[in-house]
Length: 129
Image (cartoon, rainbow, N blue to C red; front, side, top):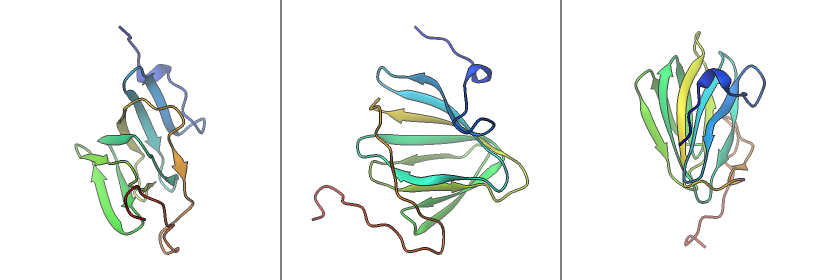
């Protein structure tokens, strides 16, 4: 059994970013706060699927550098392994969301620098060689 509260977590970038409510043993659960004008690096996971549930605000989500989605309060979005995902808060209100990553695989996050308008990074996906 584990009990936690969002107010007790440390956000990665001090006043914003992701923070974990629980890490493992089978899933990771966290909260993310992205203020207006901030982004979160384009990245993917080899083994993990990551799901996001928007609590407040809105965010632009880019998948694989080609597909653009607007997530608003109440929206759920799941990223499968090897799907690159990049978030940018373009609105006037901070984006707040919960995320769940499964399975629990520490260190399974690969950053591939990218922003809209730049060439899309190529990643090696199993079975596509």
